[in-house]
Structure formats: C-alpha cells, structure tokens
Image (cartoon, helix red, strand yellow):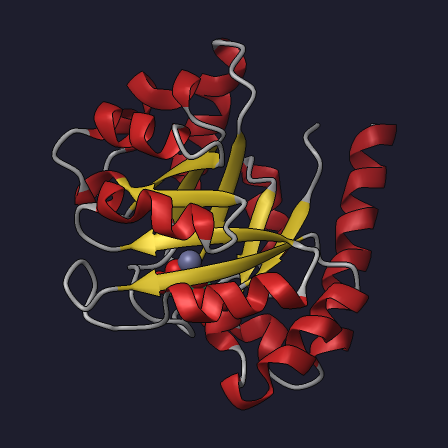
Length: 227
Ligand code: DX5
Ligand code: ZN
C-alpha cells in the first residue's frame, strides 16, 4: 500500500494567521500543504498566487502541493516551480495539448500531477499515467472550499486504482474537496492515498484536527498492513 498523506488546503485557513496555522499543521504531522490557485476564468473564484507561495516556502518544510485551477497552465510552469512548489498539478480540461503541458511541467524538475473535474471521465487520464507522478480526482466542482463531496467521484477513484494495479502503474492518487472525518476512510478505501482537506482542518482547533486525521491515518495503515 502507498503511504497515506494528509494535505491540508490553506484555502480554508485564516489568512491573517496563516503563518501560525501552517506551523500548527506541520507540528501535528501533516506531510503536504495544499495550495489552490484560481484565476477567475477556469473557475469563478480568484485565490492566491506566487507572492503567497514564496512566503509559504520560507515558512515550512512540508511538501507544497500546488493545485492550478487556471487556463493554459504551462504559461506559469516555471513561475510556480521557482516560487517553491514541490508538486504542481494542473487540469486536463484547461489544456489544448495535455502531453505538451506535462512536458512543460516536467522540464521544471518538479513532480507533476494531472487533475480532472467531477464530470470528466476518468479514462481520459489513462494515456498520461506513465508520464505523471499523481492523478487528482476532484471530489467537488473546483472553485470553492466548504462543499459537499460528490459520492460518484469516489467510483472514479476505484476505477483508476484498479486500472493502475492492472497495468502496474505506481502513481499517487489524490482526492480534493469535501473530505471530512466521516468520509476520510471511504476515500482511502476507494484507492486514494493523498487526501486534501480544507474546511475539516481549518475549522476550530487546527492542530487537534490534523492530529485526529493523523491518528485515523495510522490506524488505517496498520489495519491494511496486518490484513
Ligand atoms: C476546491 C479546492 C480545494 C478546497 C478544499 O476547488 O481545490 O482544495 O480548498 O476545501 P474543502 O476541504 O473545504 O472542500
Ligand atoms: Zn485543491
């Protein structure tokens, strides 16, 4: 089984206390920090970009997992790489030429992820799986934090996981949107190993929330390793 990773999405954070909240997430053991970039075109919202990413890079040793929800993503491949991203994920739906986009991100030397929206068929990812490090199955419509997970998206995770197993493809599978303490295990059982959570981490006591996820993660890993 691939290592389970929690990736708190700072879109759910209090930006006036971002430094403290990132430190709390890191202290509690989260391995990645998820960084959502929205351009107001690919998705209706506008979130944050390079200046915030550079500050975050100085503040943390966690892997920074950048999720680009922007049109024509290769335009900014080098900028996000230079600003401190470790993994850069862009959307299948945002590219004219996906293979060319993957090459552009590969050239930065960073890890590369490819994302699909809830209504995009999972099979569109198949031709690219051998060229990427991570596939991101959106479990809500991208654009906003705090939405409810769409259950049918987890069927796509199951399908992708079994395709990868049948073809001996060893990539990470990330889920993003509406993950909470109730559906966390279901998402992992479906085959995801990188779990994004915004609202569930940043509502209330951040450090406690991350600890709770980490304890669940360890219990799941232990039961899988023993069974
Ligand atoms: C949605 C973003 C998510 C979002 C997750 O477009 O990509 O990363 O921040 O937030 P929650 O966990 O609140 O759904
Ligand atoms: Zn995201």
